[in-house]
Length: 124
Image 1 (spheres, rainbow, N blue to C red):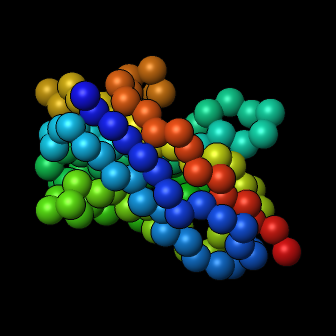
Image 2 (tube, rainbow, N blue to C red):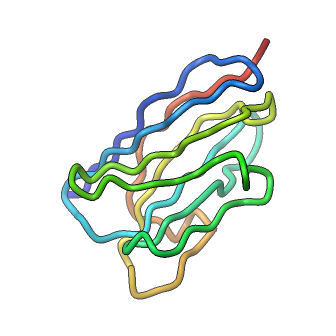
């Protein structure tokens, strides 16, 4: 059974940095995506890393500010978020796409296992 657990969300000020963690158990081969959902909005794609860590995609609004990385030893995926803005406020989810034969995908229904989400609030 694959389990995905996010952590690290909290209240921060604009311009601050924050690192989210996503611990995965039960599987070591997967594309890992990060999504977010603001209150009253649809869930949106943030970033994805391929199973071999060789390909990474970001949505335009976070490119240059966010970076995704993987600790393969401990099976943890990180989302480093710098220069945070109020528009980044959302519940952040990580999700595993286990069909690694396919290219990276940005739509949520492609992902098989989801975490419970962690709240990130950016406010002065």
